[in-house]
Length: 139
Image (cartoon, rainbow, N blue to C red; front, side, top):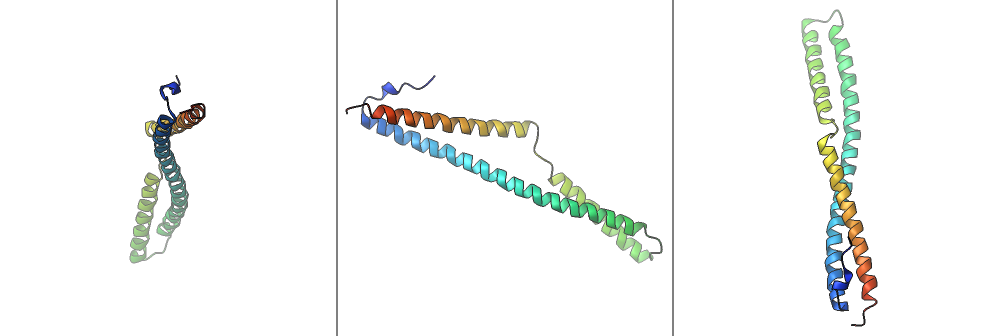
């Protein structure tokens, strides 16, 4: 149900209501901008993590082959095994860090974004309604 704009009886009351509505809209627009910025950062981070994960996976393959190579001295064998352990740890850490937010957290984030979008639309309508109504008042 839409708010009853006839509760405002003067242009001054309309002006006061418009100031409040405009400030509230700015607050929601700011939140919307913050969410968009966070999404952009997350996308950039996902791209970087994907590249790092690809390199770490290649490193694991390389050091697996290196550690399996025959004819290595004991020192070279230990060095290859250490490098392999380090590469596996790096790959596994990146895999954990690149997990996409899903399930309840992703759903709740979507609901929050929908609420903000709806609130902005509601405020835009209210601002236009008060502005149009104000034009009909004589005082």
